Amino acid sequence: MTTTQHFRFWSIGLLVTGVLLWLLSDMLFPFVAGMAIAYLLDPLADKLEVRKAPRWLATTLVLLTFFLIFMAVLVLIAPVVQAQIVGLIAALPGYADAIEQAMTPIFEAMRARIAEGEFDQLRNSVGQYVGSAVGWIGSLIGGIWRGGMAILDLISLMVITPVVAFYLLRDWDRLTAKVDALLPRPYAGTIRGLIKEVDGSLASFIRGQGMVCAILGLFYAIGLTVVGLNFGLLVGLGAGLVSFIPYVGSVSGFVVATGIAIFQFDDWTMWAVVAGVFMVGQAVEGNFLTPKLVGESVGLHPVWVLFALLAGGSLFGFTGLMLAVPVAAVMGVMVRFFIGRYLGSHYFLGAVPAVPLPAPPGAEEQGASGTADDEA
Image (cartoon, rainbow, N blue to C red; front, side, top):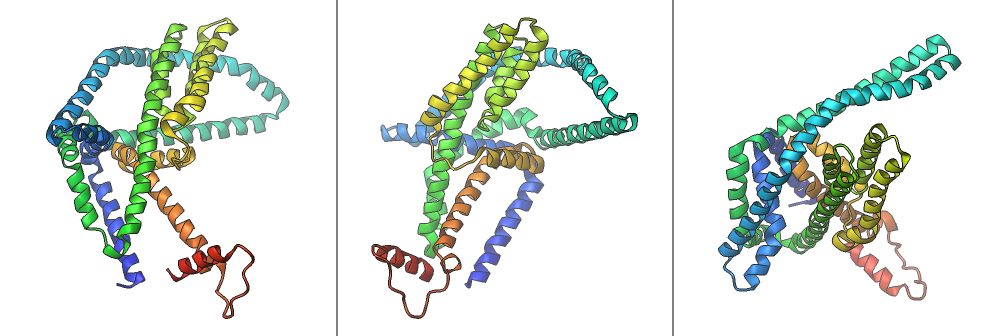
């Protein structure tokens, strides 16, 4: 096959895969969730297997422990979180009225300095932009909700996902071996290297960042609850969950918690205490948690992760959210690979002259490497 035929073949394959994901996104969530659980727990099953445990027994023990811990946490936290969500929804109108009262003097001062027509135009423009932003956020959340209704299906959540996770985790090594056997032979080594890099990136980010989110969520929830902040548990857990996107969780949690503290407490020292909880959490995350658990060579920029999550959620609902980070990791690795090939090609280095020019001292190895890359 020529290069053009290879490009056409893989482009059609990617297009068909994207269309199938879009068409089946409503029912793929339990399968994608099961695959994610199997991927996350595979190292634990491998460690038990090294200690002479049969694969089926290692799979059963790992999955049973995982789901028991998950259900215990859910039973303990869910009622409190539900009560705080109801209370926050009931308190939102009061917060909105307080914000309106606080902003009224500012608007009155602006009205005194700006002409009546310009002020009305400014107010209408602000209202229009805010309405558009709220509408876009609402449509995004609605799309994710409609696309992820399978998460509310008891059968999908309690039966299909554990079954898929069990069989994938049990047969993980055999499945990866079969996929490896299907790789095109001329490019098998290159593809294996790229897959290894993707796996390292995903393992560092998902497993490491997941532990960071859990630790930060517990820290924020306990800290805000101890200082007496209303809805502290909900805000803390939410900030920890959103910390999957580095820095976004801490910043958003800081803004929400500080805003609630301003309305709840009249003493500025309590405002400082609430802000201090997030400052301490951010310091611990940046200096200890992220370097130890995630590492420095993940290769997933926070902005790229945020874009991938928004795009995946908008296009494919909860299924898109589950696939967003793996797809972002694959695309990041592929972009770095093609940039590396470009920097070693004649497109970047220029055409090789007919009569080789004398190389500067110490550049013989670099020139030989560049020539080999060009010929490849």
